[in-house]
Image (cartoon, rainbow, N blue to C red):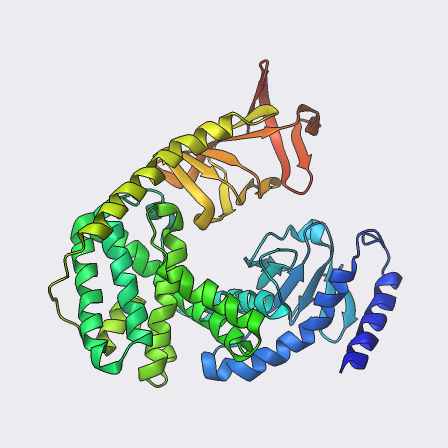
Length: 454
C-alpha cells in the first residue's frame, strides 16, 4: 500500500513538473502532493458511506486547494478550458482566476462545486479535512436537487437578541437533545418534553422570527453536519479521530453560548443531533424530510410528538448566563475599538450604488450595531468586472438596514499597497485583500483615504 502511494506521488510530481505557465516549483509544496494523491481515496470513502448516510444523494464536483498555491478539481462535468488534466478525472486549476476561499461552495465554470482549503491547522488528519469537504458536498446536493428546503437568513442573526434568559434556556434545551441521543430509552419522552418546552418559552422571549432563524440553520446545516460526522465516524478506532469527533461534535454542544456570534455554530450541532436521533429511531427518513418542505425541528416533532411540561428551577445557571452575556455584550464595543486602533492607513470605500453581495462568513461576522458589521474571515462584493475579496482580514461594512445593502467598507492597510491605474482602485495584500474597482473620486487625510467607487 505504501509502495503504491509512493508511486502515485512520483507520477504526479513528474506531471506537475511538466505543467507550463503559472505554477512553479516554488509554488508547489510536498503537502500539495499529499492532498492530490488522497483524492481518489476520498472518492472511494464517499462511495462506502453515501447510501447509508443519505440515500439518493449524488456527489457533485469537489476542489481542494491551498491559498496561494495549486487547486485540484475532481468529478467536474466540464472543467475550465485552461485546466490541466493530471490523472483520471482530476485537473489542476488556475486558482488566480477561480478565487477560491475557505470551506464552502462556488461556481466553477458554471457548475456549483464544493471546495476546501487544506492548509488549516485545526485539521490533524486527512480524514478530518475530507469530512468537512463531504459536508460542503451535501450543501451542493441541497442547492442543486432539494426543493423548498428552509435556509437561515444571516441578516436575522446579526440582530438576534442577546438575552440571558434565552441563552440559559437554550443551553438546557441543548442538553436534552444530548440526553435523547445518549441517555436511557425510558427517559427519552421526558427529555423530549423538556426540549419542546424550552423552545416554546424561548419563542415567547425572543420572537418567532429569531427562533425561525435557528430552525432554518438547523434545517440546512444539520444534515450537512450529520454527513460530516458520519463520514468521520468509521475512523473512530483511531485515537486522534475519536478525540476530534468528541470535541467537535459533542463537547462543543455542551458548551454554553452567551452571544449571537456563536449561535449559528450551535445550530449546526443541534441540527446534527436531531438527524442522529431520527436515524436511530426512524428508517429512511432523509428523503421524506427533504420532500416535506418543513423545518427540521417541525419534521422532528412529527416523528416524536411532545407536550409542554414544567421546567426545573435553575437559579445558578441563570446567574451565570446573566454574567457571561453581559461580558459578551461589552466585547462588541471592545472589538470595534480594537479595529480602529490598528496600524496602517484607514481605507474607506464608499459605493455610489449598492454592490452585489457575493459572500461572507456568517459565523464570524459580528454586529457592532444595526448599521456596522465587523467581518473577520470573509467578505466578497462585486459589480460587473469590479470586485472586492477580503480573506481572514478585519473590515467593517456599513449597511443600510440589511447586511446585503453595503454602503461602505472600512479596512486598515499599508499605504504603499494602494494603487490607482486607469481610473481603477487596485489593492493586493498577501492573499488577504484583493480589490479592483472603478474609482470615481478620492479624498486623502493624514491617516485616512476615502475612495468613492462606482
